[in-house]
Length: 219
Ligand code: SF4
Image (cartoon, rainbow, N blue to C red; front, top):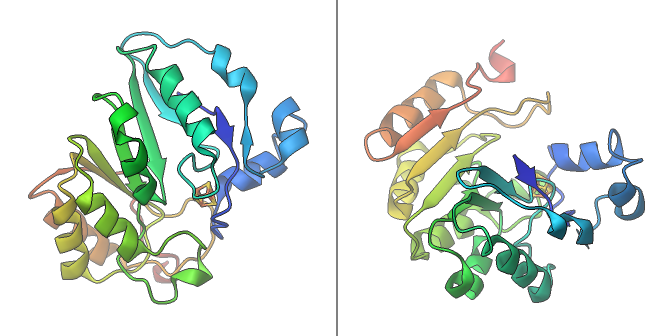
């Protein structure tokens, strides 16, 4: 399940489904009708309680760790999840440099994730204003945390050897790989190249290959 105590995002990814959802299907929702996809604290979310053993994706409708998010909002989220030590919480960001500021408050069982669609920085600004993939990979490698997760989704074309090396340096417990599901015609790798990546990653981590398909230009 997902829990969204903070919503909205300024990374402006061209393929963002959350923004589309907030501005279309959810536009009459009490929270999104006021805030749209601008960063906002969702006060009502803090009444939510979680059960032992539940798996909770925190903030799939934004980036809690974006540089624009006030410290106070992040502390509110961390204080709330600390009340449920038997629930499995998962964070995902495109700005992992922010994790280190709060590491001391993050419960030990939490999974800290990064989305990194490619290792290539060149031309990335055409897809997103988030910190460049190279920076994200480095920050995650430096992060001293036992449960690191990498999400390569939606996958963009990459340099095989270099990408695998950088991912190995992170030492992730799990890696998710998947293609864009929304017909955005992104600069995707061929399916054979992606399969090679999945195989190489499988030699040192657990890989979940979710929505593998030929690149749009291969069909
Ligand atoms: S980081 Fe996620 S939420 Fe933010 S714009 Fe990109 S896809 Fe949307």
